[in-house]
Length: 299
Ligand SMILES: Cc1cc2nc3c(=O)[nH]c(=O)nc-3n(C[C@H](O)[C@H](O)[C@H](O)COP(=O)(O)OP(=O)(O)OC[C@H]3O[C@@H](n4cnc5c(N)ncnc54)[C@H](O)[C@@H]3O)c2cc1C
Image (cartoon, protein in one colour):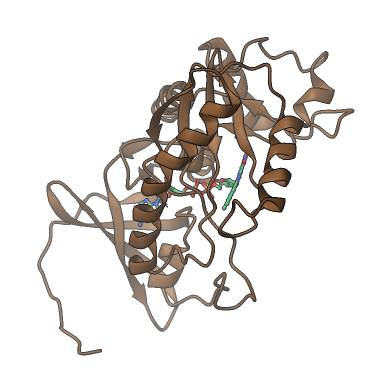
């Protein structure tokens, strides 16, 4: 590929102790923890909402919070779960760790929209300097010491250089590690297979008389009848999120590479075109189900 040298003079932001790239579950937790320890912390998130796959990807269900006997997670995550419960963002029935422990093994549905607000508040209350709609696009690495001196971020006002003492890559795609030349393993390149992503969607008016097992039986029958272009036995189906609403997690994109922009684009186009057909098949399972929005991000 031909190359073009790109040089610009850009404004320098004030310095931070910690810069966290990516406002998903990992980045939010890292930023809150750093700020609560007294570090001057900047959190940059490429989209308009915190929560990563849990909000923008509509993966609105936490799995395996319990092994059936006891809760497996506590700390900051549990604080988020409690705040979400208090904001009315958990699936009906509330959350009682003492009585609901066994069922938490199978997942806890939540409102992705409420989680956005809860995370905003926790992050801002902790004193984190938050920049949404801001993407980390470059790293300034001192090669002899292999230390990152600063990063370049891009937002609606242009490019900015941000110096800091430490940096945390919570982009989910190892963006900062890649920019720094750090060695890492890439799914599909360094592994024989790549996990297929899905474009999740919200659905309303679901009649929850059908069960997860019924859905899986319908999938088995569909595979046997040759209704799938790819025999996809791992179709989670529709999860109950809140009230008559559910999250539709169906339509895996096989052989898609989420770190290749052309493959990514093709994936979004294909998944959006599938929404029409999955809507039709949902209708036969649930009375009057309505398809709402698909998520802004593949998961
Ligand atoms: C196919 C699949 C299915 C899954 N199913 C489930 C499930 O059903 N239930 C469950 O609990 N978990 C599930 N998970 C796991 C869950 O999604 C992840 O564990 C979780 O999202 C990881 O959080 P994260 O913060 O590391 O990354 P992410 O949630 O991916 O967050 C990364 C964040 O970084 C931002 N970002 C990316 N690049 C930049 C950049 N350059 N600058 C600034 N910001 C950037 C993104 O916008 C995003 O907000 C699944 C994961 C996969 C891959």
